[in-house]
Amino acid sequence: MSLYQKHLPVLERARQACRERHCWSPYPELPAKYPDAERAQALGLQAFESHLGGAGQSRRFALAQPGQIGWLGQEVSPYTQQALHIEYPQSDIDALFAAAEQAMPAWAQASLEVRLGTLMEVLDVIYREHLFEITHAVMHTAGQSYNMAYAGSGVNALDRGIEALVYAEQAMRAVTPSARWERSFGPSQIRLDKTYRIVPRGVAVCFACASFPTWNAWPSMMASLATGNPVIVKPHPATVLPMALTVRVFRRVLAEAGFDPNLVSLALDSQAEPIGKQLVKHPKTAIVDFTGSVQFGQWVEQNAYPALAYTETAGSNTVVLESAQDLDAALRSLATTLCMFSAQMCTSPQNIYVPRQGVRTPTGTVPFEEIGRRLAEAVASVGSEPKKAAMILATIQSPQTLALLAQLQDEGERRGQVLLAPRPYVHPQFPHARTSTPLMLQVSTAERDLYAGERFGPVSFVIACDSAQDALAQASADVREFGGLTAFLYSTDEDFIAQAEQAYARAGAQLTTNLTGAMPLNFAAAYSDYHVTGLNRAGNASLTQLAFVSSRFCIAQSRRPARDPA
Image (cartoon, rainbow, N blue to C red; front, side):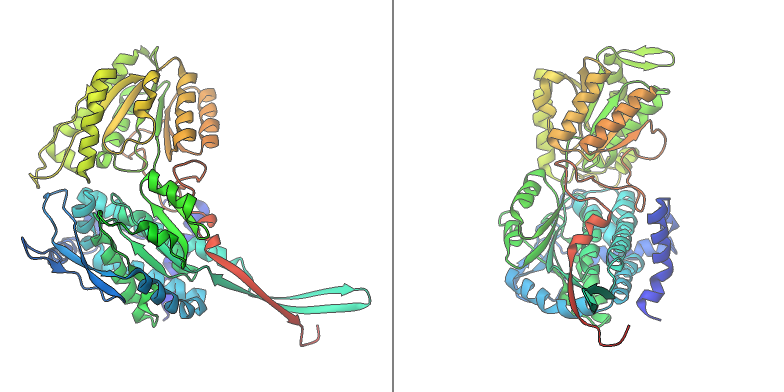
C-alpha cells in the first residue's frame, strides 16, 4: 500500500470537512482520550526529559545537517526558570540553501499523490510517536499549560497541517496536465497538444513564533512542501525544541520515502545575533512564512520582494458590549478568554468598548462602572485558585511581558483607574514558574495612545465611549489602523449586530457575537474557521484558503502540433 492510499481515508474526510465547514478531527481532543493514554504520556515525558542537560552540562540534539558551524541553545523554561541546557547544530545559511535547492528537483518531479502521502505520514508519525514529547517541549519553551500544549500546539496544529494539504491539493488538481487545442485560422485547422507543468517557486523560509511555535509553522511547511518547495525552518531562539523535533521527523520520513532529507532543515540564531533579515533577503529565498511581532512582520512585507511573503502578526482585538441577554454569562466568557494563556495569543481580546451610559439587560441598564467592576471580579476569580490558574493562565513566556505590565500599571494609575492589579500566583506543580494574573485598566477614549496597538500579555482596557455607535466606531477604527484578527460583540439589537458585522467585515476582523459557555471565545476550529483575513495590518495571509497555497507554485506550459489525427 502506498502512503497516499494509507492516508486517503483521513484525507477524504478532511476534504469533506473543508467543503462543509463542519466539526471534525481525526485526533482525540483531550490527552486522556489518546490511545493507551497513560503509557503514551509517560513515554512522552521521558522522551522530553532525555533531551535535557544538567547544570553546567549541555546535551546536544542529534540532527545531522549540512554546513554545520557550531552549536547553539539558550532556552529557559517559564515553569522552572532554569535553562534547558540543550544545544542544537547551527548550520551555515548558504549551505542550507544549496542543499535545499539540490534536494528540490526529485521532490518536485514526484507525483502529487506521492508528496501528499509522504506529508500525511509526517503528521501521522508526529501524532503516534512524538505528540506528548512535543507537548512538553511547548510547555517548557512557550509556557503553555499542558492541556493547551496538547490541544492547541498538538492536535489542532496537526489539523491545520492536514487542512493546508487539502487546499494545496485543490489548487494543484485545478491545473489539467494536458489538453488538445483546435482552432481554424482561415482555411487551416490548427491542432496543438499542450502540456501544463506545476513548477515550485523555490526555497521557503518558515519563521516559527515564540508563544505558538507549531500552530502556524506546520500548515506553512505543509503548504510549501506539498507544492514542491523545500523549507528552511527558523525557530525563535526561546522555543527551538518543538521545531527541532518537527524538523527531525520531517527529515526521517522524507529519507524513508526515498527523498533527500535536506528538503527540510533548521536555521538557528540567537537573540544577540539574529539571522532573520539575512534569511528573508537571501537571493535564493522564494517564499517567506512569518508569524511573530508586528514590527518585524511589517519589515518582512516591505522587504521580502522578490520572494512571496505570508504574514500573521497581531493587532488590537476588540470587544463591544452594547447589551446582553445574560450579562453574567457574557462577562464570565469574556473573563476566561482574557485569561487564556495569559492573553499571549494573537486572538486574545484587549480593548473592551462600553457605552458610558451602561449596558442594557432585560432587568435594566447596568452602569459603566459596574461593568468594569464585575468583569474585573470575574477575571480575578480565575487567578484566585492556583489549580484553575495553572490550567488557564499558565505562565508568562518572556520576562519582557512582566516589564510591560509594570509600565502599563504605572501609566494606568496616573491616567485612568486600575480595576485589577497583576500579581504572581504560585503554580501548584512548578513553584518557581514565571506567572502573573491579568492587569485591567479603566480609561476613556482620550487615553487611546495607551491602548492603541497590541499590548502583548495579560492586559485589557475597559474603555468608556459616548454611545454604542461610538463604541463600534472606535473598535472598528482600531482594527483598520492597528490591525486585528478577532472581534467580539454582545448585543440583543439585531440592527446593531448587522451594523457590527458590516463594520468588522470591512475592517477585516473575524467577528464572534453573543457567545457564552464553555468554549473560549477565541477558539479557532480547523476545517471551519478562517484565521486572519489578510485585510488589515494583522497579517496578509489566511489559514486556510486557496490563496495560502496557490501562489507557491507557477504553471509552465509547452505546446506543439498534434502528432495524431483528431
